[in-house]
Image 1 (cartoon, rainbow, N blue to C red):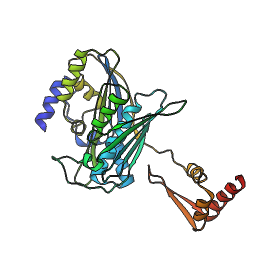
Image 2 (image 1 turned 120 degrees about the vertical axis):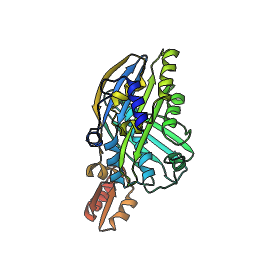
Image 3 (image 1 turned 180 degrees about the vertical axis):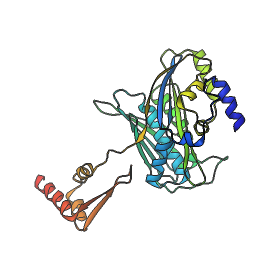
Image 4 (image 1 turned 90 degrees about the vertical axis):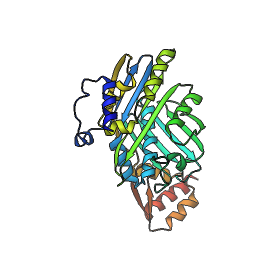
Length: 317
């Protein structure tokens, strides 16, 4: 690992390559996404370690579920970085595997998500989490929420269920965007997230073959994103590796965080959409508790509150 680190540092040609980054300093760093142009291509690199760690704690996910959820939510953040005016992106993985589906949503630098079965477990496959086995065969759907108008939804078949290749294939078949996506989550034996992040390289219209070939070569020679982040590489330094031998222009960087839009008012509005018969059944219980699937926040409604909702529904009908 140390030899690999030195090779990467030399290849990056970064002035800070010889600086030592301790584990403590790295873990105190904030999650961030950096955007840049490399030739006629755009590149987005995200560090999502803290965010994925918080997701794992919120949902009590197994090692495997943490990896799957972290990849999906990171993918949503990378796609959201391409949107204007902080418009949102949602990714849904629907497979026939034991994880029971994965959902990730991002708007600007804020993201949330959940898995159907947070306790899923499978043996390692070639030394890595078998996310593909947990997901199974199925589809990936991407929803882009515009500032105005209806959301755009695209769907394609899963390639291998490992998320990154599925997202790459989706972008090519459904949005006609030649791209490269890498996603990774490193989890220690105790289940703590040591590193998480990803990159998204997007060819711009008119991007020449020479640029694409150089990017392809650089990507093939780049270590796993989770390994680079675990060694202390920042998103900007990773961009330097991916853009080796090319002109790089750093555009901007912004922080990333976990966040959920749920509230008791939103849940109440959702309950009010239920048929009167369903509300009447809930009315029989002393209290009704609703759990947000994205953040596990619990909202409690008294019998009287449910009764009032049902009465309003009856008066409207």
